[in-house]
Length: 232
Image (cartoon, rainbow, N blue to C red):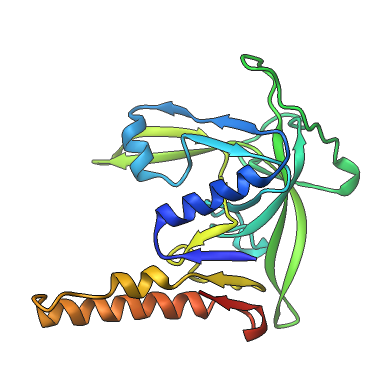
């Protein structure tokens, strides 16, 4: 079940709570930043510090191959962690795996070790087959990607990090375009945030009302069916 919230802070808190509940080893991925980390924190989706465990729900934050459903917003589950296989190539951020390829190691490398384990992620891809959208599951070994901040025609900062974020919970804004089999929607703060005081300008009140109603519509329309929708 994917939970949708209107505010990023609610999403972050919900994901951290679910991460804490998992009784598995934490694998820590610290980004390599070239340039201002502060600028990167506010400009790219990749996290400076990313904590993952086997069993985590995650989301891709970069487009790789639209035809294969490997797009920004694609959801998946971490099946475990394993060493990178073979030489790294520029297009090798996502390496497809077969079940026989899985050589999982649960214990993360010791601090300061040059060895790294990367997540093996089963992605829930939506693909078109015979004119119909169907859900397809495939395993990928996810390595680091480079995220850039550009200004004035040049690159001012770079971050090298896994193109993943935790995704038991997702913001309503980020969920646009997704189709979810089971979704829990928290609209409490959507309508609370839409309330205005009597001194508010009528135009401002109307604009806010339209915006928050739009958020509610986006959230509710992510569900495939009424049976897979839970509203709070």
